[in-house]
Length: 229
Image (cartoon, helix red, strand yellow):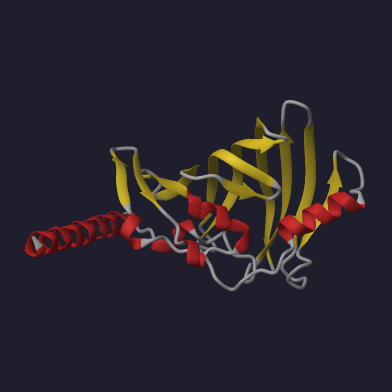
């Protein structure tokens, strides 16, 4: 029995390394580095300023926030809330915004768990790879991604990351929301001059628990005016 278990473990490791090698080769064929998924997770060494418009839509209200990010400011002050629904933010809104964005940023960045790579689509149009992010490497603001399965969609014609999608496999918390169901889509733009990916848009469809009831909330984050500092 011990030999049978050992054989199963060895076979499992062989399959794991074979899958990793296949993914690495396919990425290499397209000229894509393995860190393409995690370039945008860390604020502590960010090199660009940008603007952010966030729209939250629920059954009872629609709220639009305008904010900006300035990496020249000290950590904890880099995110600035400009207005909420066209009005100057209240003290309560500023406090909530700072709690969500201006907590201390760690020097760690997200890393993909090497054992999780899996090709789920490989046709003439897209290479799609599913993965898990290592929870020990995620900044606090993105800890919720550890409870999700991610899938990256690489356009074979452009040889660039086009979008990523995250779907939760366990309850999680985003900002003030206790989320039971999450579908998060992230759309990217590749800056050829700087050889980096910028996030253009995030669409987050959530089912959250509020006062004991399930409520659907849609959050849209639109990023613009990236400028290197």
